[in-house]
Image 1 (cartoon, one colour):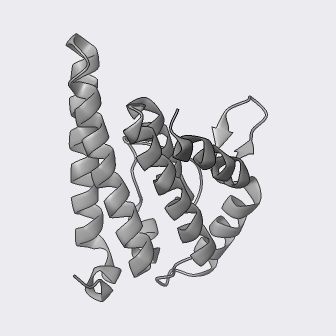
Image 2 (cartoon, rainbow, N blue to C red):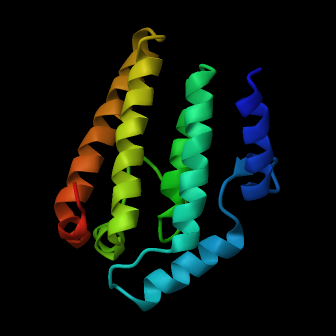
Amino acid sequence: LPLFYNIGWEKVYLIKTKTGNGLVRLQSFESRKTRSSSFASSKKEHDSLETIKKAEDATVMVKMFESVGRVDKALEVDADILSMFKADGEYDHDVGFTDDEIHSFGHMTLEMVVATLIKMAKHWNTRMNECEGEEKNYCISNQSKSCLDAFRIFEKAPAKHRLKD
C-alpha cells in the first residue's frame, strides 16, 4: 500500500471512536451532544471550528480511499462527514437536512456540506459504473439525491451570501 495510506490510518485512529457494535464512526458521542445542545440553543448561523477540522481530516481520508479504489469506504466516510453536521442522529439520504439545520449552517459548514454532497454524488457515479440491475438503480437514485440535496441546501442557506468565489 502507498505510504500515505499507512500514514492516513494513523490520523484515522486519532479522530475515530469505536461504538459498542464495532462500527467505526468519526464523531464521538460527546461532540455530537455538544453540537445538538448548541443547535438547540441557537437558530443563528454558526460554524464549529472543531467539527470543521474533523470534517477536513475526514476529507483527506476520502481522497485516500478514492486513490486506492475503495469507493464504498469513501461513501461511508462521506456519510460520516455529513452526520457531523446533523443536529441529532446520522445522515440519511431519504431525510437529508432539516430546514432548521440548514439555517444554522455558517458559511464554512455550508461549504463543507455542499462539497461533500457533490463528492458523494461522484462516488455514487463511480460505484454505479461497477453495478448492474437493482443495485445500479439504487446508485443512480442516491447520486441524484446527493446532487439535489446539495442544490436545495445551497438555495435555502442564509450563509450562502457570505461565501466567496
